[in-house]
Length: 126
Image (cartoon, rainbow, N blue to C red; front, top):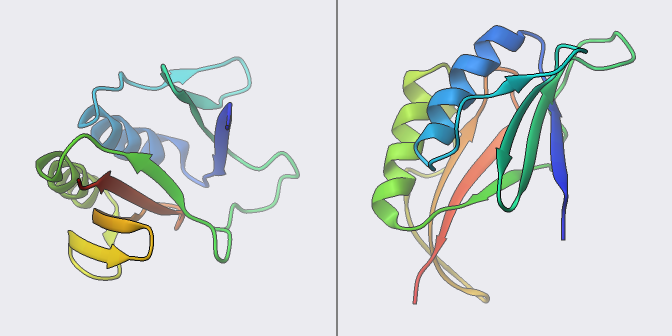
């Protein structure tokens, strides 16, 4: 459904360190910087971009926004969460674990990146 997701950042190098470690747990290589200084993470399923806002104002997290990553298994969700916390992210909401909802059973973890963007790792359980 989506070609890419772009999030704002105030400190691109702190974001690079965070996302290189975080996305590395999902098998995604280090970010690639384009001529405008934006950082891109490529996968077979889409692209995540990190950028300073083009209007020159500080980046702020979207209220109610979450970027979710599909994860293969609960162990990888836990590695994703640990890598994020170890590299400048902040653990938020409940600790990583099983959640049940009307759309099924999931293993989830939530973080905020160094700029405050809300992220989720999600593994749908059978």
